[in-house]
Amino acid sequence: MTAKPKYRPKLPDFLSLCERNFAQLSPLLPAERVVGERQLIGVDDASYFRLELLEVCPFTTVLRIAPLAATAMDAEQDWPALQPAFDVRLYHDARLAEVISCHGRRGLKAVYDYPNTEMLQPDEKRQVNRLLGDWLRLCRQQGFRPEPVLN
Image (cartoon, rainbow, N blue to C red; front, side):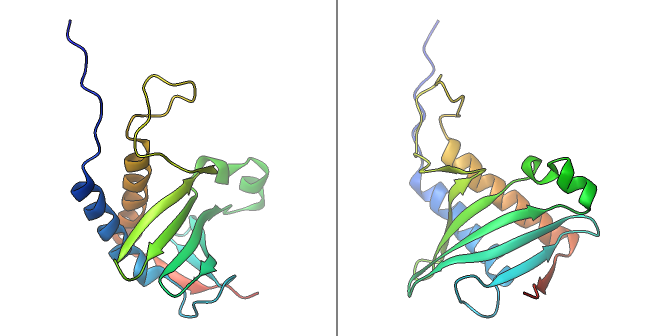
């Protein structure tokens, strides 16, 4: 039996994924680029996500994309915990968007040994960036509705 070769990330593929995520995420950003600014994203009549700017710098922006419970009952049943929640860093000069945290897991490494105690995939960083891309594609296909959040 031959050993499976160790996963090696392909940088051009990863950068292409981050470029596509940046292009899809840009139309969802709030018009005002100020820390704390929020945007509500309606994917369908029952699914809403909040996009919040956490950090705004000249060349980068960090934002959080988190689900909102559709009803009070959903909030009680911890519905948002089942949905993806991302922290994303946008690199404006390079036009890249990279997930820096998913479901509260920060500091994603490019490659993980497998098996590991946390049951992470060898390409976990690539997988969460693909998940963001899939979510953004769903928003576009469903006809997302960016709506300002009234504070």
